[in-house]
Amino acid sequence: MRSTRSILEPKPPEELPGEGFRKRQIAHWLYRRGARDFDEMTDLPRALRRELAENWRISEFELIQAFPSQDGSVKYLFTLKDGKQTEAVYLPYKDRKTVCLSSQVGCPVGCTFCATGALGFGRNLTPWEILDQLLAIAHHQGIPPTEIRNVVLMGMGEPLLNLDAVSAAVRRMIDKNALGMSPRRITLSTVGIPKGIRRLAEEDLGVKLALSLHAPDDETRKKIIPTAKAYPVEEIMDAVAEYFQKTKRRVTFEYVMLKGINDAPRQAREVARLIKDRRIVAHVNLIPFNPWEGAPVEGTPKAGIRRFAEILENEGIPTTIRWSRGVDVGAACGQLALKETPPAPLRFAPNAPNR
Ligand code: SAH
Ligand code: SF4
Image 1 (tube, helix red, strand yellow):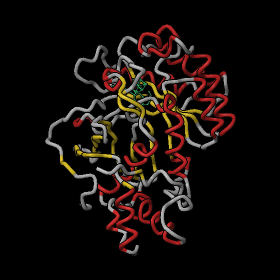
Image 2 (cartoon, rainbow, N blue to C red):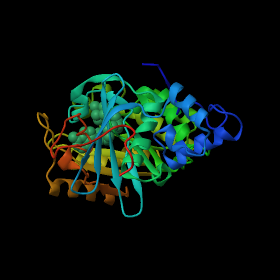
Image 3 (spheres, rainbow, N blue to C red):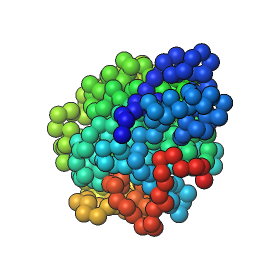
């Protein structure tokens, strides 16, 4: 088989193949219309379409499987060209359509409560593999890619450990000649790597930051997050404060509620202090633990979660409890673990016609 290059790689329209206005047409087909086959680009001359098909590829995936949840969200399992797999989730809401994208195959961090962490690390995804998750989902949902206005980088992997690729993918998402998304609607979630957070600030992408805090003290954090041994909470919080100062974007703190580990009232007050001391405009998302087979931890019961939220609110920190979606198909936060969960998946070729 001939080797091809990803058509998502060239910067649109200038670096795309073709002469003159043809470049713009190709960009339009790819990013606005969501074409998955060069033959769909019907206003291009046949010879150009043939040339494109010979030298370029649109899809980064060999196989795409979809697992629809009862609540409307859909988990996608992507088999990459090298046989490795990664996942993404489609989350339709009344007023918006969101996708949750992966940045790596598995994750090298290995948090105790996370099924992705238990998988170990496969490899970094390329920018085009990250971007193509969005395009492939739009295609299989039968909507133009531009209808997806919200992206959360909260799938498999730690995005700040693959920042070059993540940043290239995000640039393409916000590029007016590509997806033209607002960076304010792109959220990057990190386990907390101070150097990475500072670099993200320098990159000046304008994306929203979500920090997976999960505990206000190093002792607890180290028990559940291996990177906490290298990066103390105070250092992470300083980097987050810098990010906030630079972007003025409200920061989200994520906090998965684990029974008897991080759910004491004292810990809620400490979380509030960490945020208030640095005058970060923030919002806390309490995430009920999503169980997975073999997990060594348990979730805090509902009443405990509510009490924790109340303490934060009383301290003046806006707090929401984020009930995850897609739990029945293993699509919820921390459940992404490449399992072919029942009901039987719908299988698609990477360029199957729209449904
Ligand atoms: N690596 C990044 C992004 C992916 S994880 C990070 O850790 O932030 C996305 C979110 O899901 C994180 O806040 C993570 O802590 C949370 N999460 C992981 N496992 C979970 C589980 N079993 N239940 C609920 N949330 C979980
Ligand atoms: Fe990796 Fe995030 Fe899961 Fe931790 S929570 S193992 S950093 S994906």
